[in-house]
Every structure is written in structure tokens, then in C-alpha cells.
Amino acid sequence: MGDWDRDGHQDLITRKDATGDLYLHPGESRRDYSYASLVRIGNGR
Image 1 (cartoon, rainbow, N blue to C red):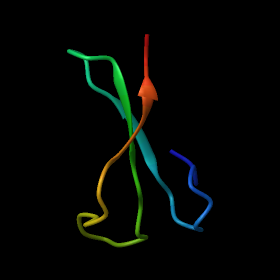
Image 2 (cartoon, helix red, strand yellow):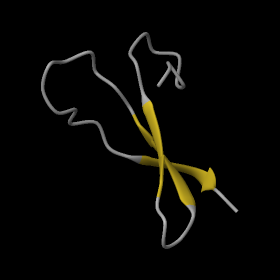
Image 3 (tube, helix red, strand yellow):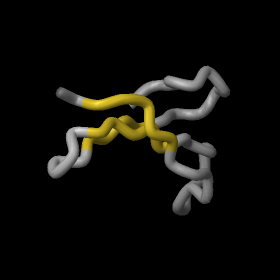
Image 4 (cartoon, helix red, strand yellow):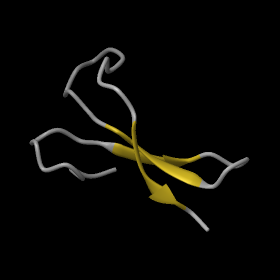
């Protein structure tokens, strides 16, 4: 975790096993699920 998009909220980076694609899950500093859309940021190959 870290603030990858520099908006002041903690974010999460994940990788899809089947494709190797990397995704940014933008945080919203909420105690509930984030409604922000996933952002494909590259691949893990």
C-alpha cells in the first residue's frame, strides 16, 4: 500500500494472475469499499 496517485489517500496495486496485468485500486480514505474505478497501469511480465 501507498499513495501511488499522490492524492493523499492510501492505494493498492494488484496483479491478475491469468494476464499479469497490474491494476491500481485508488483509495478514498473510507471505512467502506472504494467506489473509484480500477486503473490498468501495466503488466507484470
